[in-house]
Length: 210
Image (cartoon, rainbow, N blue to C red; front, side):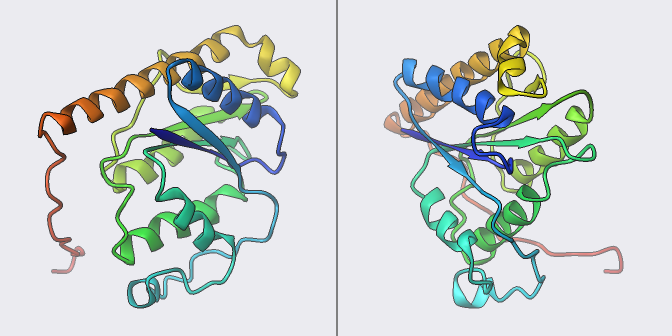
């Protein structure tokens, strides 16, 4: 079992990474492998809403999003981390995640479904719960179980050193990791007992006119 931890901060080893690393360390103690993936600062174009991914099996925009989707398919669970920018996820993370989740679904590679996800945010002061709500919606639309900790999954601090001083926040990262490991082990045990996720239903696309 492997967990992909996605760092949506422009800073590769900043506050968001510090929270994700605490999760990764605890997962290792639980016997679960993990990898931290840094989105980086490369320009990511927004989704064009062209739906070409449904025809060609990948996003039509040729950048690192398609490589990420190929990589993500190999993992069993996902943790998305982002700093709070203007009370929302970073401008790096949003277009990246929009296109990754949409293209994976529309291309028929619906591997996110039934795999657990968790969101983690870091902030100097505020905007954390709004950002968590935003990130959790990626999981909810993809039929992914959302894993929680003891509190909302956030850490506070302006530097990695300050984040490490947030004892409650860091403790919650460890609790989140334990809950995620437990869920993955339960899912594996269920599969061995022949208990599988429900079959996907065909999508019904409607609007408020019909």
